[in-house]
Length: 301
Image (cartoon, rainbow, N blue to C red; front, top):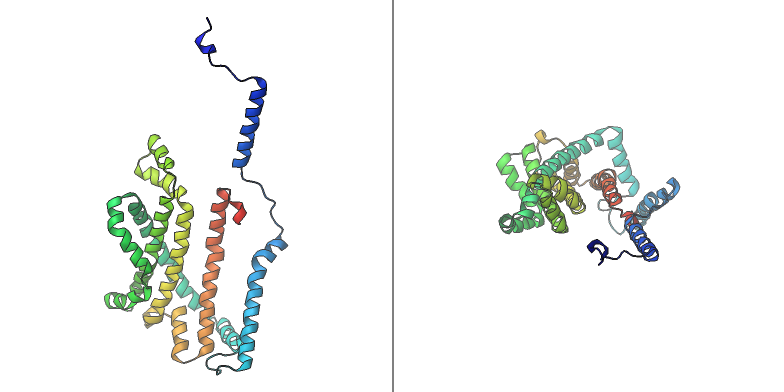
């Protein structure tokens, strides 16, 4: 009579070889394909050259419209007049004060928004009662224009920095929290179960499982939160004006509008746009690339 441990037949060498080939093929599919890093010239052509060409075409179109004189000079100044106004602020150094005043406010407000929005997003995502009560409110606050908060902030806090930061927080926190909620909702259910089986408590599960797994969605929420922070700050600086607040980019834009100085207005808009693009390229684009590379998603880079 055969022994019980001999009842299960093992595959012969030929079958074993085929199984090994299948396993090797599956491992190959799971392994990110190594791509050769493009040269510096090719990276320049692919990433830097297209925006420069688009900007050049925009300036050419602007020059053509100005030369055609469809609008008066007070409405559409020449590109050279705007450049002279911008370069004058660079020469006297005032542009650096404008940019620093606005950027450091936006950075501090955004950092406070991350500190408040991250635990709020975790709470909304994991507690059903909180989601039912606060979830619609967060969505409504996200869609509410930040400029609507400026009069209330000025009445509550006066024309002080606290009013500016209040508006920035209300612009950034809902986007950050909703981004984290969306990221957590897309996590495969097996991951939290694995953490529970391994004995992770709620804090450890949030730190080591939920946040890393939800990182792509959370990063999208952070990018949107920064965009809302920047927009909220500009709205607050445009309306709330005081010597105590200094002169940021929003106040510089309002100053040009008050004096009907269109070159100053366009130069201020250019600076606001330049700062937004710079933060995207210097801060969020590298973070996004790092997250995608860590997950083997190099095809979209």
